Every structure is written in C-alpha cells, then in structure tokens.
Image (cartoon, rainbow, N blue to C red; front, side, top):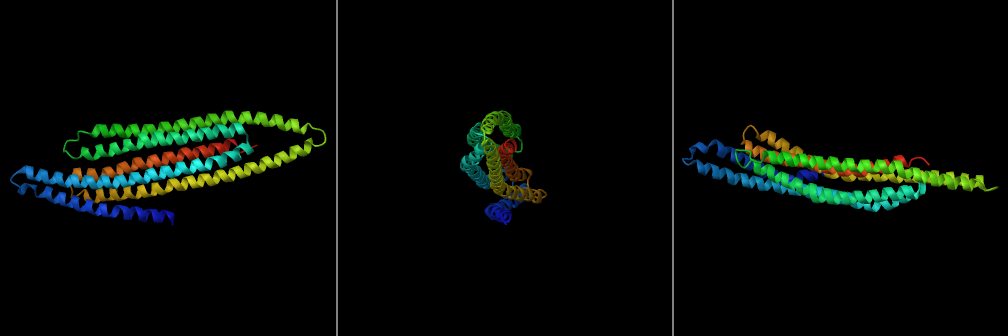
Length: 301
C-alpha cells in the first residue's frame, strides 16, 4: 500500500507539468516542420527558443520538486538515526561493552555530520548544477557543455563511492578493535567474580543469562532500526523512480516526432533523477551497513 500511494503521489505531482511539457514538445515539432514557410529563418529560431525556454522552466520545476523529496528523505533518515542511536548503543553497551558502544556511537555521529556536510552541501548542489548544465547544453545545436556535464556526473559518482568506502572501512576497523578491548575487560571481570568462593558459580551463571538477554534485545532493536531505515529510503526512491520512468517514457514516445534538443531536455530530468536515486541509496546504505556491522561484531558475548 505504501509503494502504491507513493507511485500515485508522484504521478499526481508531475502530471500537470508533464502534460504541459508534451504540448510544448508537440508545438516545437510543428514549428520545426513548418519552419521553411517563414521567409526569415530567425523567426523560426526565435519561436523555437521561446518554446525551449518554457520547456526548460517546466523541467527545472519538476526537478526542483524531486530535489525537495530527496532533501526531506535524507533529513528524515538522519533525524531517525539521531534518535535511534542512543537507545541502540545503550543496548550495545550492556551486551558487549562501553568501549564498543562509545566507538560506534561516535562513528554514527560522524556519519550523520558527513551526510549533512558532504551530501547536503556538496553533492545535492552539484546535481543541481549538473541538471542546469545538461538542459542548457541542448539550447544550441552544438553541444558546448557536453564534456562539463560528463565531468560533473563522474565527480558526483566518485564522491558517493568515496564516502561509502570511507564509512565501511571505518566501521570495519572499529569492529576489529573495540570488541576485542571489551572482551578482555569482560573476561577479566567475569573470571574474578567466578573465583569468589561459594557464590562465584552463581554470579557467572546470572551474568551469562543477563548478557544473553541483552544480546537478544540489542538484536531486536537493531533489526527494527534496519527495517525503518530501509522504509525511509524506499519512499523517496519510489517517488523519484516514478518521475524517471515517466520522463523516459515521454522522451521515447516524442522522439519520432519532436526535435532532438527537446527530447534531450526532457531526458535530462530522468538522468538527474537517476543521480538522486544513487544519492538516497548511498545514504541509506551507509546507515544500514553501520547497523549491520555493529550487529555482526556484537552478536556473540
């Protein structure tokens, strides 16, 4: 039901702009076909530029709405992780130890800051610049900005991959070091308690039951957090995917009758949408991988 509602919401949001874009594309096609009737070629060019600028404004309006969906989705995800982490790492501290919980908690706080700074301040504005360059590239018959748009796309993809590799590597290193320190501390305390005559065995048994219960609680909280994280990412991905599909389909249907530059402008929205899907997927994967690694390295007492 959630996916269906998001699909219909995306369709309703883009329907008006999409109808206007199709009408403008058809009008531009008619002007292109009958441009020979004008004695002055400049009249045909001015008419096409006027239509193209209207088309450009509609495409950027749609892309701006999609960008707002992405910002809202990332903000919801970071807000959830900020509220989820204290509870989850409290359970981790009981199940594994304070060193592991403190190390991963600091890593998640760093991750939230990284997402807000790198994704919010660099990647999303870069995608906005990319889509502007992309649609302006088709304003002229000569593609003067083609290399610049390719460079921006490569840079955005590399930034996302670098952030993902950095976070995964940091979590793996934390997972190798911190649990080992907690294991040594806990093993020393447990053996000292078990060495107490008379009550040592009882203390050891109670400790194992408590720690085992703490691990189960921690795993349950982690699973719930992972499911919510996936759900928060799924909503903007479905919405953006619908926009990408609609604009791809529109470009495919108009290609036989409309101008190549008009088709390129329409298709640019879907290409920008693909980059936004990568951004949302990467941000969700960063938090999901963190939760999974924490659960994996603290799964056994």
